[in-house]
Amino acid sequence: MSKSIASLILLMTFAWSISSTLAVEGVLQGMPDPTIIEGDDGRFYIFATGTGLPIYRSDDLVSWTEIDRVFDKPVPDWAKRAIPPTEGIWAPHIVKLNGKYYAYYSVSSFGSQRSVTGVAVNATLDPASPDYQWTDLGLVVESSPDRDDFNAIDIAVFQDDDGRAYAVWGSHWGGIKFAEINPDTGKFTAEAERYPTVATRLTGSRAVEAPFLIRRGEYYYMFVSFDSCCNGAESTYKVMVGRSRKPEGPYVDFNDKPMTQGGGTLVLANNDNWRGPGHNSVLQSEKGDFIVHHTYDTCHLDSHRILQIRPMYWTQDGWPVVGQPINTANPPRDYDGRFTAESLVGSWRVSIDYGPERIIDLIPGGRIANHRRASWSVANNQIMLTWPGQGQSTSIDRCIIEPTGTSFIGRNQDGAVIRGVKICN
Image (cartoon, rainbow, N blue to C red; front, side, top):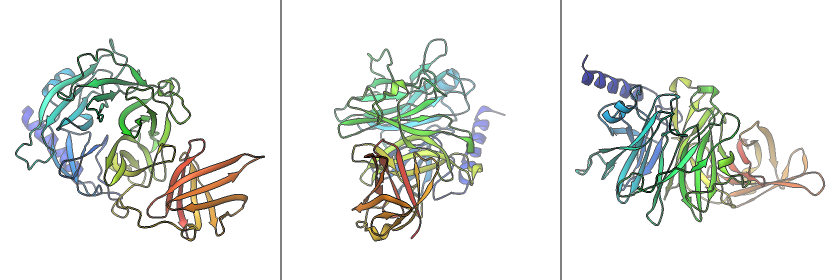
């Protein structure tokens, strides 16, 4: 069999596996390691791990259609020569730099530190445009076990308001690395000869990977994924975050622990029937902020990793929290009013840091059943739960009520995620 025929069969097999799966909760399966961007046409585009680097498009963040692939072969020739055992392209990142779209991609083999990251460029994301043409620019960064303390995969690139651009990347080993990018070439700047570490883990599994950078106000936020990615129902992947006043760090968590010392504030972990949420990107748009990630559905494990998109909210002290996944039954929406206490009365499933749930009953008069001194109140789209402790101590949970009025998300005064889902009125 010729190489061209073999490649064609591989592409057809992969395409069939995408189109033949059923959507679960209104999202598409077969989209691991998603990276998202809003195009010049106002549509949303996702690039994901897969043969030839598949591209998906949506008008509403709910319904997605595969529209093209960056490459007409599973892996670019130069990357296949560099990494002969590879079976495909991993962990892409799409970003707009100085008016052009750069699609970064990783090529490696499972468990190996011998990896390469490349980049392709296009003037537009719309395949119908006469200017649409992907041009591969080749190598950006590579890693070798006898030379480097990092793994050259999972790159993400961010361009700041002043025009300067930065890259973060890495998986396991020495953690997450940082370098400056020339926004006119998509490659590292000439002076980027050494790569400082901006996040690592010193104990436990030491697994940290898939960084993503954004800026909000005076802070830069770096999201990473901890623990085990790809073990189905046994996955322990979770999204963590730190922030800094400088793009190069130091990044610290809610308790001011540096991410170079294992710090990180929890954003999203296993919950409900979802396992291993992680390898996220973030969309900042006029529709709001959204976290985009993959996860497993324990009710449909045969679907493997699926795409999930959740609205991202910000607490009063500037830390992100994420809501319920959007889907056909729960599309992105704005608040259509303010919530009253009467609308929130009922039973709620509540958890701390996505741990064991307990039932609390919000009853009229701002009381919480079976908690004599506890209370709750609502103002606009926020709910506050007050839990008096021993002596003068009091714990306060400040949460954002989602537009449906049937869930809330926030943090307590210690920075732990507080999540509530209404189960009855």
